[in-house]
Length: 196
Image (cartoon, rainbow, N blue to C red):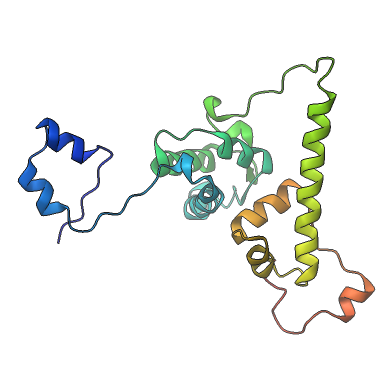
């Protein structure tokens, strides 16, 4: 059994005569098309957290988390080297980072989010729009968490996303578990809320 991978358009290569047709048809049994990382950005937080945990032993116990600003930079990067480039980036940041978490300064210069342009007259609408979007997203996440007693897995399912992305958004918006008298009385017993 052979598993082969390529980033070349083999149909085109066969028609141009640069790839053997008989070999192509021997390999072409089951094809799995994997889009580049830039086309599946929702995988970036999960992969980044996985690689952080994987290489943490190389950092003397540091690099336990990725800051929201660093995650924004990772999410905004084009990733021409796909998952391998992301893994190498996280490993480098884990090994060379000085603090308890990966911050923007630990990333290569080309990945750091550019500084916002100087505010010009008439840009208040843009600022206001972004603030409103962030505020709406934050409230949406809080509503979902409160609806399921702050069980992140259930909240992620309710929002149609993954737990990794939900945790990233919670860090970004500084959302922490809040208890009220009512929520404490209605809180389920057992480990159901231990997921956050």
